[in-house]
Length: 293
Picture 1 (cartoon, one colour):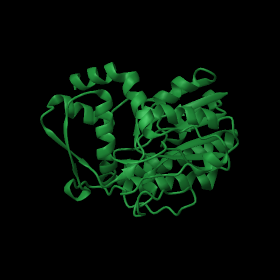
Picture 2: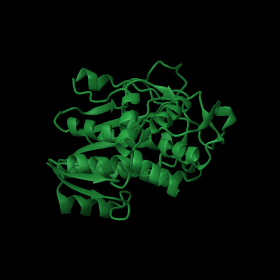
Picture 3: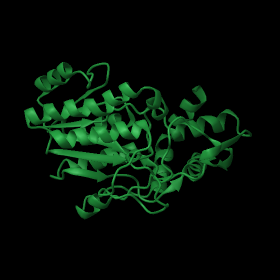
Picture 4: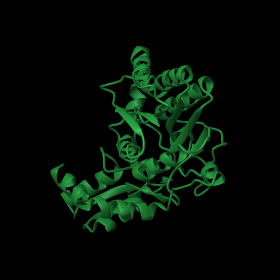
């Protein structure tokens, strides 16, 4: 299968390239090679590679920065997917669009999860721009699959777990305050890439959720990861109100993988098991990176 991965330098893009490259012909691009907000560049991409599937991992993911960069976030998160969908329609390609839990307001009491059919009501600019991307794809292309995920981490690029490790080893006696009233599912990008590979063999379309099973708070997740890494640390829980940010974060980001389960192709496992495997596989690399930082 001929596959193009857009946004290949991100966590999910990197892992998808490794996994899909074993069985498929994959061409990967980042923003420096293809600007998905530029129609001419998108059209040239399709003419050059004639993809059967396009996986869009590209996004303006700096949640707080989206609040002050509305035009840029809408361009990358909404206009970009629309242009990809238009070219997919023209070339008969399938589009897999990666989306987010931020399309929900998070007001539902935890641990009650959000399902694919629940109404979206984002409260941040990031969430609004990603929802606009979902709607643009749906309006243009029938052969699409929108995958909402959440709390992503991986070996590539920066993420929450890496930040916690860097803070812990920089000063083990310093107490790290971590939010304990936001709930979600830490999701390994490697596992999600495996899930995408499985979905390539299905004809599923529309919206589906793909996050790790189970849930935690950021505080609980951070403690579990650092315990797996076997590093000393001091940590205390705090509330969202004690850690104000420009963008609103959903208090409940728990997504139910109901469509994956209905289709019998859910590969996502418990978040604790994946965090343990992640720490075990990359322990030395993670420690070296944290020390260097």
